[in-house]
Image 1 (tube, each protein chain N blue to C red):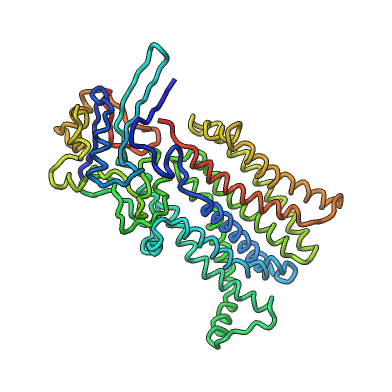
Image 2: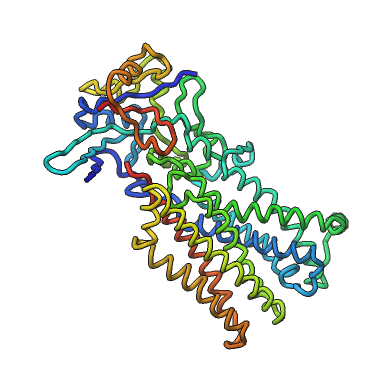
Length: 313
Length: 179
């Protein structure tokens, strides 16, 4: 038996009885970061494969949303900062040991790159697109000349951004439920899955939707594998990791996680997509919306559960 | 670099919380927050019970995760004393350091920056003891250089059984509790 009683001092706002330092802003940012990473990744990959017309939504239309999605995510991050006027401090130093420093510099690079990528494709999506100044047109011609290099850069940085959204949390040894190397790949694949779902919603052709659905099915399968692997890792680890896993295996996060993330967000859309592929059900956008919902719930639940879990002392 | 730390005698500590009050007064800690606190840790099964009263605070870890994860360098280890401090001018209030601390020793000051125990460095640099050590009525708290074999803290660690908090977290905490 062990009983810990805090007899004086500790009733700190957002710290006791467990952390509540990160509210809705962080999961929303992580969701949008993963979504953007996925959109840019698939856009650049299909562009390089010469399928800009066949996969028009994926390559040309979806990237137009990226600067707005990224700006929304960054605004959420800004809202989370307690010392907002010190935002610029992120960009006065590069700290290689800090995942958050990696993330802020990655965002600083990917934001202008993705904006150029979006502008490049805006011309083909909007036929009447005109630049107000000549120098802008010249600058975009220069970008178009090096579009392949830009695409490769986007693939690289999109992968970093997607995996970073998980590594940001997994680097915190003090929060056992976050402290697993699986979280990076899991958030990366989940981000790809939500991006595929986003593209499916935007796509106007049946062929593209069908292709995206097939890839999404593989992403969902990978996610399920990673989730099972994550819990196997926890249960085979130290006492605190076993206790952290119990939060999801009988504890307070059991119902929300297995129902909303695994059930509604992964298994049901996967089942519908399989039946759709077999022409057993009418093709709808329901699975795409469910995947987006599941991706958002995954981040909300993991961010909250991590703050709930801590070392015992 | 010296390696300043603390040794707290749990046989002497009565949990009076004078250290908590002294810290709040000395460092003008805002209402609702604290840099140190008292924990009663009871273990065993009746009638074989063991109670330990501990005055806890930031452990000024040698392998400090808060310093590693800080994106701006606001959390740093002082080069002269080996104490973990926060530069308020560099802090963005991102709260990564709070999430990284297994001791939950940090909080967001109402002015926006992250705050925690400094071992009263403003006093130590003038040759004084930290406020909590100074006021302790049972003299259970000791502060000094852990690297100096002749310091009181080093002698106490050598002479008495002791433990640190959550050493398994790998942070190398620098506060030792004498048993």
